[in-house]
Image 1 (spheres, rainbow, N blue to C red):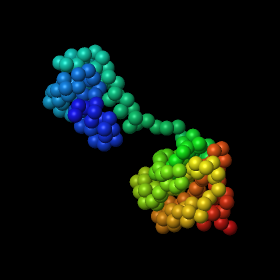
Image 2: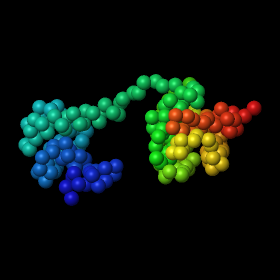
Image 3: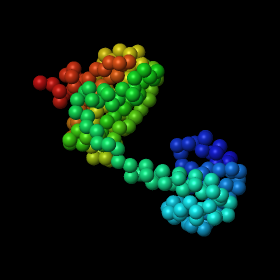
Image 4: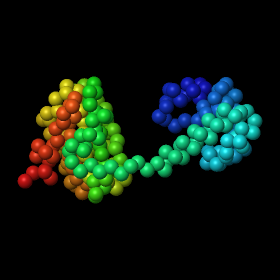
Length: 217
């Protein structure tokens, strides 16, 4: 199987560094793979290759100008992604959470659950899709949420999922699942701040509805 077929078959699994460089080299994939192997034999590691400029890459046998630019630009983009700092976003109200979640969850045919992880100042540390289900429900394991929260040292969590029907009214299952998530958050001292259910252009907030323990009385 050539690198393109391998990548298309398992795009999110581990591709070897050699295969990734071969894909950037392009052209005949068998020749590109050989060139990529030779590149690693010469320079030793992906880190060392990433430190080369485009002109040095261009002079390597089997790599022309176009391939050199692709390799250099691809590895440069990868480095930038590691150090990219998103603008500071504060999520202080259910309305602000709704505006954040809405592009991800409105008018979808399947239920998905997203989570926002916040620091003590309600600044967004991370947003992540946790699970995707069918048109009726999505399976939610509190462990999926709180493993991330612990890893990034979040101080609070807001979750949201959509109702493909467009009606954001919480179901009994929504209420019971939310209570379970809130209980885990309480044990870990990382509170569940809110759970939003997104309809087509409407939402319900467990905090505003008084359905969370920390929002009662």
